[in-house]
Amino acid sequence: MAEVHIIGQINQAKDFPKQHLFCKWHLQIGNNWRVISGKREGQTQVSYSQFGGTTTWSFPIDIHLATAGLQGWPKIYIEVYHLDWLGRSHLFGYGLVTVPTSPGSHTLDCYTWRPFGSLRERFVQYFLGGGLQLKYPDLIFSSGERYKLSTEAMGVVSFDLSVLLRNFTNYGIEYN
Amino acid sequence: MGDGTFLVSLSGQIEWLDVLAPSGTSWYCKYEFYSGPDWKLIGGLEAGLSQIANVVTNGDKVVLNFPIEVQFKSTNPYGWPQIVLSVYKDMQLGGYGRAHMPLKPGVHALDVHLSRPISSSMLGSVFAFFGYHPELVDVKTLATTTGNNLIRMETTGYARITVNVVTQEFKNLGYDIGKTKD
Picture 1 (spheres, chains in turn brown, cyan):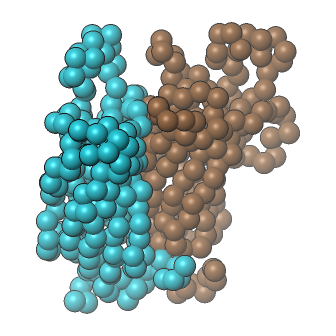
Picture 2: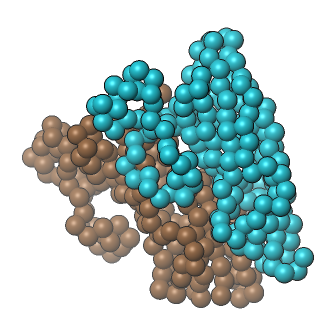
Picture 3: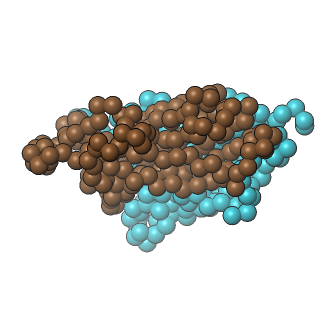
């Protein structure tokens, strides 16, 4: 079996309308992939910056995967939330990044979005917060069902990932 | 070797801190390495404490120039070493930061973002006002990612680390880290 290591961090979030953000992440893999060690999902601390619009998490990611095929190459799926002063969390964005297939260190920007409500819903959201959330977050990965959604742009989450491949060349896999 | 182990040698410096540093304050920094279950320290110091650096001019960088020299061996890249910094300002917490060591051999400049916990209760913020800032019981939680859910943190600046990475027997074990030169 070929092995993949993903080592890195969820670095920071920028251009979100508010601070006090946290991020839930989840690694999505295909059926012939297996996690050997490391956590497949997690949640960052709530971050806030005195200095401007960029909040940093530096949240570590370290996953060891084994695979028997290329289908379902790992993707990282994130949900960004804002934690308000009353301790309520509001959805601020969904996003998805594909883990690079070329080994080495990469900086990835994940542009996030959130569901865009009707005029009335947006009015309520403006004054009370909250807003629409996906009932089935699987919609984020499915390219076939996305057309049902109406969305708006939110901020950017940046990742620093190092990808380490092992034994891929033994199977004649070509990359780079 | 030939028994499936590889070696990672890390050497470098904690160069400086870029933080809100008013003149008259003094700063120091503690570093610790955390690595996975298969990793073994074979040389150098896994933790260290810097000198106290005093700030003379408002807003200056806090220059530490603190050397790091450590060697590890392992059979699995899982649990690649992470450095965890705890920065103190006048004996109060100035911020924590963490970063993975680079996988690629060569010289690297790392910016380690620092942040510190903020009080979660009204009483806590009253204490914080009088100088009793909350701290983490165990800074390892930053590296292991357990138990940090919903801790509120604020960014306080960043630390610049220069590190040289040398690996041994890594490529021979079948690992590909991509082009060594960028």
